[in-house]
Amino acid sequence: MRHRLFALPLAVLAAVALWLVVIAPALDSPERRVAAYLEATGAGNERAALEAWVVYEGGVYPRQAMLDRRRDLTRELVALRVGGSYALRSIDYWTTCCDPHRINESRNAGLARVHVAATDAAGIDHELVFEVWARKVTWWGDAAGETRHDWTLYEVHREGVSCVLGSPIIC
Image (cartoon, rainbow, N blue to C red):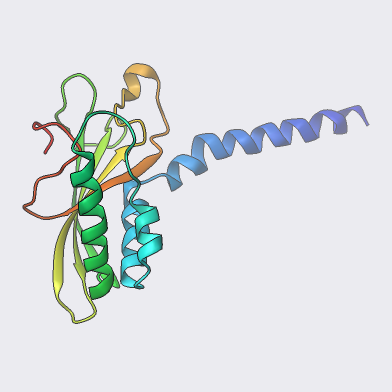
C-alpha cells in the first residue's frame, strides 16, 4: 500500500518531466508556426492567419508599418488562397543577444528566418520569408540555461523585402 502512495506522484512527476524536457520542445518549432499561418491562408481563413501572426508588444519599431503589413499581406494571401501547398526552401538561424549573427543550429538561436515557396489556388508560387522569433525576442540560450524558445511568428514578408521587426544587422 505504501509503495502505491509513492508510485502515483512519481508517475505524475515523470510525465511532467517528459512533457517539459522532450515533448513540448519537440512541438515548439519555427516550422509549426509557418504551417499554422499557411494552413489558414490556404483555407481562406483570415482570422486564423492573423491569430497565427502575433503582434509583437515590446521594444521600439515602426508598429504601424508592421500592423499595415500584417493586415495587407494576410488579406492578399487569403484572397489568393496561398499555402494549400508549400515547400520549405531554407532556415537561417540567428542569435539575438549581444552580437546578432547567423549560426548553424536552432538551440542558441533567437530568430529563425524561414524561406518558403507557397503556391496559390491558381498554381502560382509566392516566395515568402517568415520571421519566427523566440517569444522574448532576446534569446540567451546556453549562456542562460534557456531551453524552450516558445517560437512565435512575428513577421511575414515577400522575399527581397526588408523586415520591420529587427535590427539592420538582422534584416
